Amino acid sequence: MGLCVFYWLGQTLYDVRYFHRGFADCFVPENPHQLGMRIFASLMLLLVTLILYRPTRRRAGDGDAQTLSDVTFLSRTAMDFIELPLEADIYDFIGERLQALTGDSVIVINSFEEASDALRVRVVLGAVELLATAVRVLGHQPVGLTFTLTPAARAGITLGVLEKAEGGLYQACFGKINQELCHQIEYLTGVDEIYGVGFARKGGIFGDALIITRKGSPLTNPQLIEAFINQASVALQHRKAQEELHSLSLVDELTGLYNRRGFFTLAEQQLKIANRTHHGMLLLFVDLDRLKWINDTHGHHEGDAAIREAGALFKRCFRESDIVARLGGDEFVALVVEAGEAPEDLFATRMQQLLNQRNAGNQPYPLSMSIGTVSYDPAAPCTLPELLHRADELMYAQKHHKHAARKH
Image 1: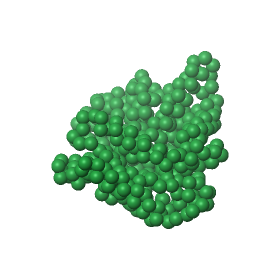
Image 2: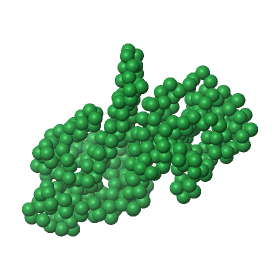
Image 3: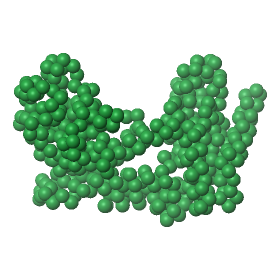
Image 4: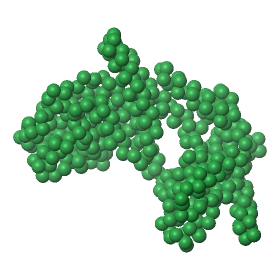
């Protein structure tokens, strides 16, 4: 529990320092997204501590050093899972970490395909010789092969326990590959033992992993592997939730920010929370300057690149708990929740600093933004469209001032 408490207190103190709110308010965030991210991170770190309470791993001397090494590995991996970008291949990441745990072995990572109720081979690592032999014997790459789940396999996956496939490769692939061919591949590549372990959580299954050891390189850390698999299962559940959010059409494909629908859906919720808890917020209405000029001068592909770059700057400028969106075209908006006593110009100043850093490099054109910032006061409530209109007017005034300055 120590890692979880340390993380929670550290995040609380960070919010107190930079958003000038009381300790109690920051300790349990009102924002559901921010609270969810805290809980997810804490759960990942809690899994790390499980290894500390496995009595079979508590031995004197080198056993204590090994335990410390295991905890360090799991702690680092937990944070890496949290920070893994949505566009990154999480199955490839899991395979690389599992290979780091198992040394001279072959790792096969399968994803679960709900539509076909089957496992699909996603990643094969540490198997240059095995892959070459398998391609020669099978006539095609094993990556992409699908294996329909049997009731026994489904039950095994949901356990999340490392189990030895007594029937070797033939059992591991559910008889999908001819038994004689399986024996031939095992003999040619020096396979010793094959273990399987499933990714599952709360009744949902996300795939499984096969660990193929070579003769002379047995598994020595099954408990650590199971602890890591628990981490991976939580991360896969979280990734599935993220992907479902995308499927609800709340995310702008070009920038990865929320789109108009996503913004209004989430911002309306925050408005209700602010009115109930009497917490102020900031809203920034932003327009990417001279996008038409970029399109006309450099082509629409560069216009899209400018929009993507602006989206990346927004991600750096604001916290994950803030609601940042591209409303369409060159218009962006950000709702800073739990703003506390932060000055109105804090985020506009931070964004300008990021723009200055970007423009200081060798760029084909500068990026510029016009920004209108307004505060939301729960003591004088207004609707979201009204708040946007006020910020839009301030943004337009700044844009008009810039245009007039360029003429002179």
